[in-house]
Length: 293
Length: 320
Image (cartoon, rainbow over all chains, first blue to last red):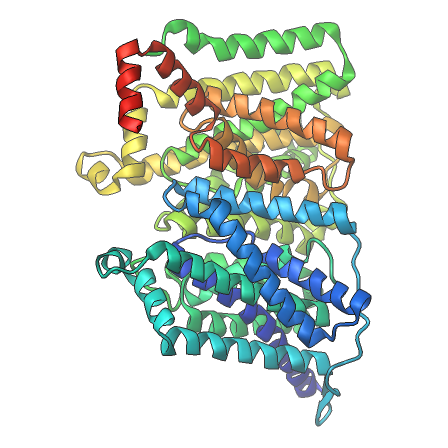
């Protein structure tokens, strides 16, 4: 009984890890390249979730296609946001950088509340896959989809960073901006590119949110808090580290909820104990580089 | 340069506004002034900490700890000692967080302090036997529930916060704080006790925010965790200090007045849901338009006025 409970808990953890990793990957890329933590990342996820929801409920676009469209829409919005004001704060003090994306986050949350009310909605799409049964453990089909899309997104991102010329330039701009400038790389373009990819992953993650969670204006806040914990675990800027961080956090959360009495209400408290502990023991995260600290 | 008159101006303004409002006794204006004063104290406290280069997103932790300490200690040790407890508990929490985050810089520091503030909210919910859980607690009502006396007390706290802020902008604190922020290695080499100064700033800031939180809890004698441990109380001080103008005493005061006034206008036009959209819009506009805050803009304006005609001409040629 105990072991079945453990298996169920860990399998569900693995699927939520797919969602967490998808969200954290964009956040950590943006930070790694620009040095800015995008506090509005969760709100891009929230907008993606609403878009996928409305595309399905009002127009009948299938969720997977809606997810992709949300990704593209958030890429476009990221472009607009970056060129209209984020590019200007890159050279400003850190408090202005923090404030700029926090301001954007507050703006988007409240616009969503005005437009769609704070109520939670559920997307009534039929499950995309049949439930997965392994012995006595049952995983809902949509959770499997989340895991698969998460893996695909990650694979795509690692291919882009390791296997393409733009990925190489992105890594150069992240590792040594001065050298990048000297070798003729347009650093601002690389900064913008990192935000476009961040927007794409956030929009797709939003589609995943619509599949397995409630759609509501504050959904991004909870998720981005967890993404911070994951990124801190994996090292700010490390994409591979974020994947490991997502699995660790998700397992810790699910195990707490299953085995600690009343642990379900701990919510992202688990995430924050992890953040503070990791940063205290190893200020650059488990897999982060010393340079960015 | 700053003359004696401009130095006294903020204090005179606080005194004048507080006394006038207490005298005319209009409930709406008194509540608004109380709101402005509480946020102004938190913004001044945040600014004091930021002068040592520690850009915190954890103000809400101290705000909540302050209100909870007052509520939890009052039945045990009486009202007067409960206020002492607020100061001691906040100072201890600040020392702890300060030591934990000593090695962290920039975004790492911001995220760790944010994590600390949010863990506090979870802590309250996880130990309901001590803290009242999600249902909240009942701190003693401030000044017997008379809004005029409440404003008087909170006005005094604001005067004290402004005084401390000015004190730390003068003497030998100013160069020490700013050297720690910009060139920590140089500060160590020049004999500035970097660790002690950073922790000192943390304690001063944490205690001031805690006292503001305790006053806030005492306004109605009832507080729920989502009221005080919310990210709002972490973001507001940072936003107000930055919008008003950092490294000054008048900046956070001006920022609090402007932001709270805009909030009231938005609340009456947009309604209860989503009125905070105005915060987002104002923050973005400020970051683009006047990154040095209101004080920066005023200084530039005064600089332009003071400059002679030829200097202006040169300036124009340089920009052309």
